[in-house]
Length: 424
Image (cartoon, rainbow, N blue to C red; front, top):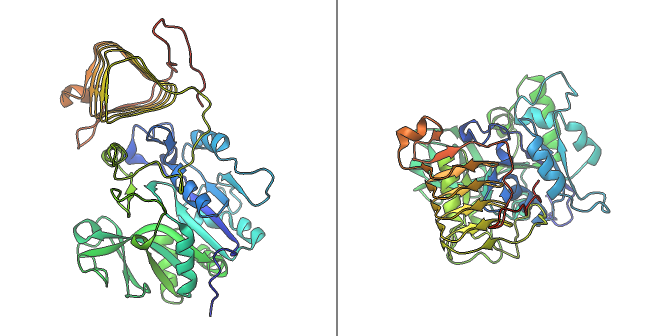
């Protein structure tokens, strides 16, 4: 019988951060999906890394691939844990081509290409998580479940309504969590044993016993297979103990009564990305970014605080070193750092990223403005979808996306003198 000892287990983590994020275009035109900015100061990757560090799992390898430079720079500046402690680090690992001249061909292939790291560390457990989601999770609780269940592999599972489960890979599990089958985007997903109105959707997050993982990777490589979800896990289901960990049972300290305690968002589309930003707004947000007992970490930005000269601001977040001129009106919006909002600008339901300048008299509604943009005076965007489509991307949900520019428009005071330049 396995011993429950999650506080002393030697654990290493692999974070799959090579996602192309094709459905997030144009936000992923020059960056990978995990490096896309979120909220007033974060990147998407910060959430999984914070969950790992808060769970005291601090030997972390971040596997990158698609347009990774922005992500590499962010990790270099934001995620130095402790240079004095040998086993506490976040290390970026691009494809090493140790076993052939090709990039990562799938999730299992990505781990297999770095199998030497597992063999060098010889951990008790290997944690493999994605980098594309917004959520809080105490991964140690999942590890405890893994040990208590005497599992060889544990998969995090999210209870979702049956009508939504058709869009996910569904896990069929017994009442104790033992996995019986996998269903890939089935039109008739099997309900959970404990709740017939919901199904278990795979979150793509795994805990493996090391020896089980090593053998599975070699077997899968020999068979020419590359993916955990499609190849490794279905193969192991016939020979090993696979369990589903119910994410709804995960308890994070100091979650507020008004929050969704099972908050997890896959930012797979622009509309989903836009809606998730609405979830962090308000005095009682669905996902409250302020939690001192489970913080979300990001870059240690050294610029000044935001400056508001006047105007009207409702239910909005302002990043550091942003400037709002007198007469501007901002509602239900997020303004990231070193961005200037000039006089008589009206922003409704917008996300304006770093180093932008929105000029006098501009009107924006349901608009995402990517970094390094100058919005000319008097522009009206987000009011005429057909007109906007001639210049920008307009989503099925009616969100207009202005792609990244090339020049940093640093925050300037009312006299026009430069005052910014702290950006990364």
